[in-house]
Image (tube, rainbow, N blue to C red; front, side):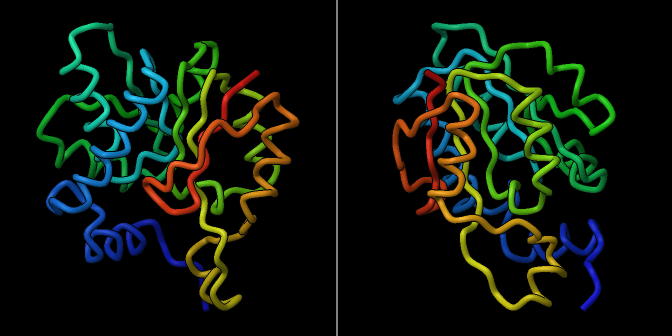
Length: 195
């Protein structure tokens, strides 16, 4: 089975409700943003792999609604078609950067980094590059631990399926420990804290 294109990936995501037009998905991303506000009270958030842009938008809305802190919320999206979709379909100002502009934000220290179902699509070398480059106090990671068939995983770009304990070992090498297992936005989500 050949690897699907970014355009096909986006089409299937949209068919499955991963969009701002799906109230249940918007609610899940808003709940994730609310969880972060209650747990770690971020003043800056970087999302690695923003997809359709819904989490970035919901995080911006919550930070904007708090009126107590300045907000800086940036999303990095490596897929050009996802990046363009998020910009076309955003009803609120959303700050997304394409892969070309991503690393200009590397010099910033981020209070919280979020990556929702992205790391299973990255090689170990790419993961190391992100963890070496982007620094934060907290990191919310959710990366599916479930494999399907080899052909399906390869087609969907699931090239790096790891179990939660494996992510814990990797993040420990960068000075992170597990702060919480929030079960949001997925049951395998881990909130790491840099110590």
